[in-house]
Each structure stands twice: as C-alpha cells, then as structure tokens.
Image (cartoon, rainbow over all chains, first blue to last red; front, side, top):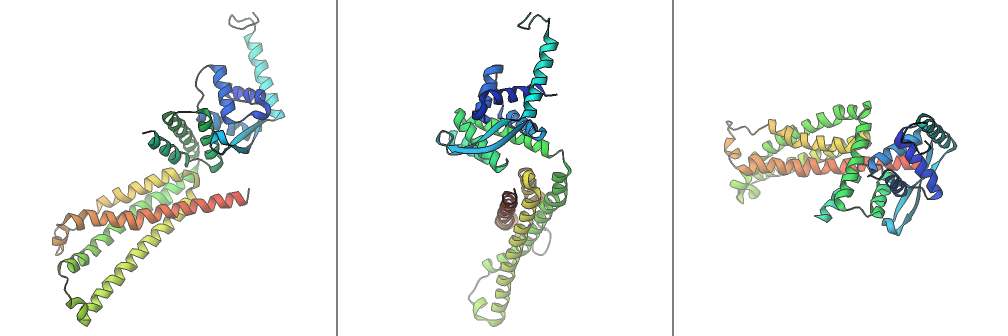
Length: 104
Length: 214
C-alpha cells in the first residue's frame, strides 16, 4: 500500500506524463496540497518509489533555464499505476458517507 | 550575503550523488528559489540522505576504523613532529652564523637537519594524503560527516598533547610561534590540506569506477 505522499507524487508524475521531472512534480504537488513541498521529501520519496519499482527515473537533457543542468525525468510504471489505483480506491471506499467527501 | 548563500548551496550539494546534485541545482534554478530557501532545501535533502545512510553499518565502520583513529593519530603525530622540529628551527634562527656553512662539521649537521626536516614533511604529507584517499574511497557517501570529524579530531585531538614546558628546551616553547603557531601551520599544510586532497581523489576514483561499471 502506498503512503499519502507517495500517492501524490505518482499521481503528479502520471498527470505530467512525458514532462514529469523533479521541479515540475514539486510544483504540481504544491498546487494540490496548497503548501510547500520540500526537495528533500520529494527526492527521498522518489528513490523509495524507484526501489519498489513504481517509477523509473533517468537523467534528461540540460536546459538553459536550469543553468545548463539536466532534469531527473520520471516515468510511472504499470506497477506504480496499479498501486496508485489501489490507494485511490481504498480512500474512495473508506470516504463513502462521510461529511467532507464530495459525493455525499 | 546572497553570493555566500549560493556558495554554501554549492558546498552542501556536494554531499549528494553527482546526478542528484545537478538535478537538484537545476530544480532550484528553475523554481527561482531565493539563496536562503535554496540552502534550506539542499541542507534538508543532505540531512535526509545522511540520516538514511547512517542506519547502515558501513559508515560506522568507516568512522571507527578510519576517521576517529586517524584524526587523533595525525593530531598527536603532527604536533610531536612540530615540537621536535621547532627546537632546531629555533636554534638555527637564533644562532645563525656563516660558520654553520663554512665549517664542515656544522654544515654536515645543518644539512642533516634540512634533509631530516624535508623528509619528515614529505612523509607526514604523503601519509596524510594516503589516509585521506583511503577515507574518501571507503566512506564515499558518508564522507561529508567523516571529513568534518577527521578535521575536528586533527586539530582538537592534538590539544591533548602540549609543549613540554619544564624540559631543557622549554625556552623554545616560551615563544607563542613555536608553541602555538608552528604546530598549527604543520597540521594545516602537512596534514589537513593533503588529507583533503586525498579524500577528493579517493572520492573521484570511486565515482569514476561507478560511472564505468554502471
């Protein structure tokens, strides 16, 4: 079972698709949770997800806006998508009937 | 202040793996973080990485096998060498005369001192470099912590070994230069600097090894 932050990271990476990399994922997460997401939490979680086989990362091409430094590109694997779907379903099920859930 | 902060970010990010280091620096540049925020974020990641690393046995083994004993050993050995050498340095600087080079026996003693000192300097620097290299190679990712501890023990460990105040040579150590400054100079230039250089080379070798076997 994924953790809450792991789910956020996988979902942000899946939404960004081919453009998923450190800074972009961080921006997506910050927009979703409406608070700061630390680079430390992002990169350590990314490593943990990669070890579990939920994402794959590779070094991308350098860009001028990054001072010529490459991006760490992220791709969600099929196993990662399954784990995220399982987490989402569990949260949806457990949230049925509670006052703060959107469908009540 | 801003430049100092970015320099500290650079310094802190060296505690990360090379790929992660450039990716993080790129992310910080792209996000337009202020220097203070960038430093906070980088330190946060370095601390997390180090904390995860020190839950394994290898960094502890490196600490107890290399950093602690070598730091203390070099701290004491370099001070012992500096105090011993200071006696002859004091003698030659205070009682220098042309007789020393004109008289064959004095010249022989003087050349022996010069040769012995240079040999001692060379051996101290070479052993410091070798130890630094071994530490850099063995510690790898835990090197930032090991480097700080080694440096602290080198300078602080030597404090336990003070100049012999009540010996026949105590007149030498009455001068602050021979008692304080000269040992610090020896420790800095013959141990600290070569060991840091050795650590850098050891780390480079292991990174090169990793890149070529990836």
